[in-house]
Length: 344
Image 1 (cartoon, rainbow, N blue to C red):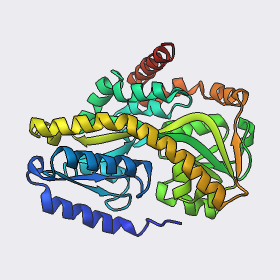
Image 2 (cartoon, helix red, strand yellow):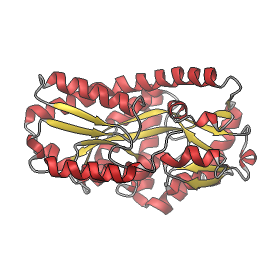
Image 3 (cartoon, rainbow, N blue to C red):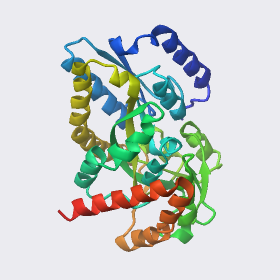
């Protein structure tokens, strides 16, 4: 069990140290700081470490990148704020958290939105005119630059009983991120959604405060959630999608050669991280099976998935209610982009 409750004061002190050490003249700084929502060894860490390698190589050593794992500088909301204020240069942002600034980001909490073909998802998440147009523009109002998006893997349910239909979720308390759309999604599935910080999930499962949770398989392995749940279920309903963010005004103040380094590196990392997260899912599942041979593996049938998909359809209207008309337009635009690519 990993405990982060004691890290808050240390994280705030570290963040203040960054302010004092380098807030003035960030555009000219040779050190770029990249903070993660996840721990070392995660998919986000793989992205940041490859980013560090490529940037340092492309700059000929002129620029160094320091990677801060989860807990070093605070929770997800803290990291986004640090980037917006120019204290650090890069972070990952969960779409549920970013939804408060760019409501359209909540579309990624709509079940069964992304394609089952990751080649389609790669193109959409790195090139979509919807994502890098209106959605990115909203983030700029908070001084955040959307550099890229990628999935960290299919969301897997961990529970203590098998889930094959919405009725199986009755009275099951499922931990979710503090996202209104995720809360509504699990209500639609028949569960009792319970928002909790990521750092509190293991303890809540252990103490039976919640009965289950959802995460990509790599996170389930590294956070040891399988130790306190007995069933892993692949429902095909969602991939955990994350944004790569930078400080907009800092980026605009960089010389052209350094902007080029960032842009080229981000473009190269698209295919790399898609392949990496797929590999992580395979290897981490094998680790779970080895550590807990009794773990039950469930893959919903196409017919079972269809029942959950139909149960989620009213969420399209709920998205507009919670996030506004622009979010509804974004959903339709993304659905069209995905369908067009699947038909090519």
